[in-house]
Image (cartoon, rainbow, N blue to C red; front, side, top):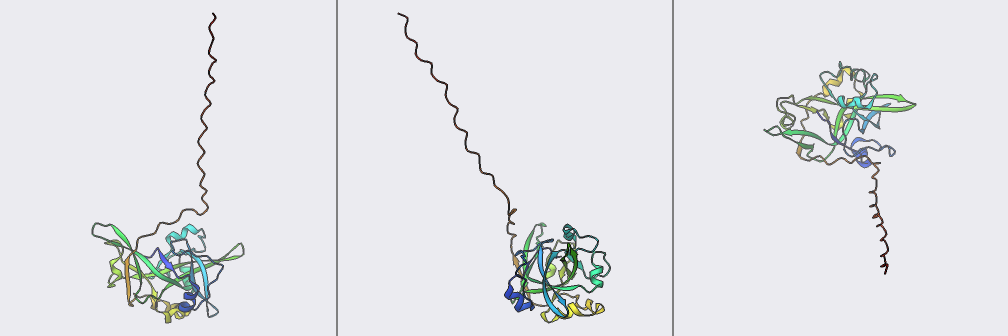
Length: 242
């Protein structure tokens, strides 16, 4: 399962590798986690279009963004029947998610884990098969999306990730010439894309960078030290009586 990845956000790369013009008004983060705003590509009247949506698909009956923390991946085996995804699947709302790299946990024998960055050996970006949802909110079109995954227990590279004793899964990585076919094919043909990636991929450990705190946090200045209390006046010396 992939819960963290690097989206392709550079306008030149989006045009060169995915054939779409980036919307300059949309701000997307350099690294994505569930519920973050990320780019995806869909077909509109047969033409590819850049969109930005929440990573974590929101079905018609759950529009709160936090719900996306449980729907950022969709199992290919159950995508047509699971409540969260079946409407998008039935409507053919298929998309391509541009990613420079994805991150997965690799576990040691003592069950400690480290984050690995996984990318293509030739440095070109992944196009990941996805589903999206769309709706109007106060007259504004909104989107969300999810990645499709397949079993990879026997994959020569990807099977080393995730906790021991659990099923191994990987995103559905598409060949570039498959992008339009995945998004436009009849529903009955779509499952033919559900297969393990056989292209050359590589990986290496990459620790998670510290995520910045709230951008508008106000730091209160320290109060200046209190001035010293004034000392009591000395009584005048008393002269002798004689």
